[in-house]
Image 1 (tube, rainbow, N blue to C red):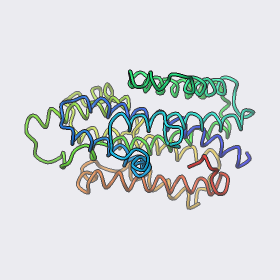
Image 2 (cartoon, helix red, strand yellow; image 1 turned 45 degrees about the horizontal axis):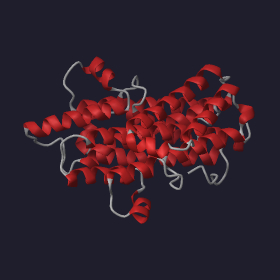
Image 3 (tube, one colour; image 1 turned 135 degrees about the horizontal axis):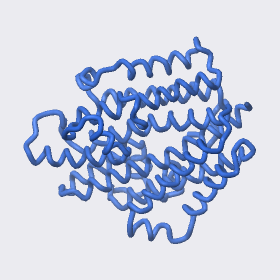
Image 4 (cartoon, one colour; image 1 turned 30 degrees about the vertical axis):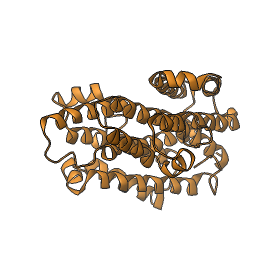
Length: 323
């Protein structure tokens, strides 16, 4: 397959997944911001969302003080922000348009229709009235796109590059969603807490589980009260949890093998080490060294892995929309 075609397919999948995960992250913080809390804590939470998405400098330059509505608009609808939901949906559609011959009609029409609906007049007013409805729509369209891809495309190299992009982006975003918690609270939540703090934590962790469609899965696996240690274990180390880091890295490693990555290459060693740490890791060891530190290091290594994939398989010097 031509590297440019692979590049468009890879980024098409990444942008679709990124739009969904940005919607998930905004939704979880929008829900938790409705809980009783001071204005200072609420603002700290929204700053955390911007910081984790590496958008705080760009937001501050444009809007100044952090405010909930401005952050939501900036991350959801601002086309001048390349990481916004609308910008990601547009980038996914443009990458798909460039390789229509490698896609089925159903895949192309799904992505194109998603962008046309996202670009409709009056979207901003509807978003202000009910942010949750728009964010749920974004998740639904991403589910539809993924289902059409799995259900209609030949499982050849084009398909493998699509899935590779999805798994890599999902790993990155699950880590970021989980890490939001540590920017919301000013103190270490694993320390001592009174009854009110524990109740507050319960709602935060429940919202995080729901943001990755894991609330029912948690109940099925643990059959107990929600604790931060088990939430972290579920979203990091469980291979059978679709959005867990372990599951995503298993998918990345498998797809690298299917696209022909050399077993002894630096790329495969990097992916293999990252996967092995998740496969054989223990949550107690991760918590002992600090969950925030672990997630930060994981994000750095995923970014390095993405750069290595681009170097070995995609267009040298990623395209302007491939960032």
